[in-house]
Image (cartoon, rainbow, N blue to C red):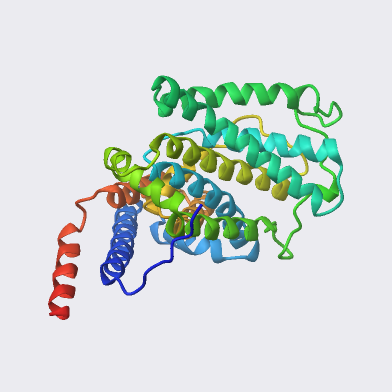
Length: 361
């Protein structure tokens, strides 16, 4: 894998970044405005509802901690999906990867009983490997028989879910827990808490490190370049000498590995034992985060934080006022619709380009 030195001073890239920030901010503003109108129509206390929605997560350290805790998981999910989507591979196996990797990490921690630091490290690595396997199967099916990775991954999520559930409910099940769950995880396997009074754990640093690694991979390596070019135009990439079949495989292996690491970090950082009775939904949340971030890893942590913030705010709003938390679905839908729409604010982008060209003359 060759490292490509990044070129600086390309103003068009700066324009694109500024435009995306402007477009994203405008989409959020419109979503907030429409949400305000809807809340005014359905609530008897609209201003209180809005206060809890937007300021509720800041009302206590514990609630803001909840934002960071959820953002850690959403960052892994968003990075996993954005890598696969950048290669134009619509693999939805991140959902199955999260579940399977969480269970594998718990089973590894219970089986090996390694010392502190080494135990969670091995568990997370095995979780990442299992997540990569989950997403690799649809990739292999597509490469060998041309099967749609979207359809096969959605179906295989349930195959891996029930396969994993068999082991957690039999071999590793704790009959004294009172519900279906594994035995308690050893203390040596748990990720340490880093902020007192919250459940924010060391997985925050792991998530940020993975985000930085993803940015460097996508922007500074030949593999990342090949992945992006394949996603933009597979035929052109193929005629340029890029092995698009290899890109198809490793993009989904990497995405599944990131999702798997996220599932392992979530279990080891937030739970005393593996106890998920259904798939957690983080894989599908990753699609939302990836869309908000425009499949750019550098924007994924920001998009994950935003989505986490409004979800925690919506929970606070629903418990303190007469507005239900489903309002968050409206906000999400509007933001995604506007961010994903290529024509939204395209005129503004053209004006920015023209202005930049005139300033260079």
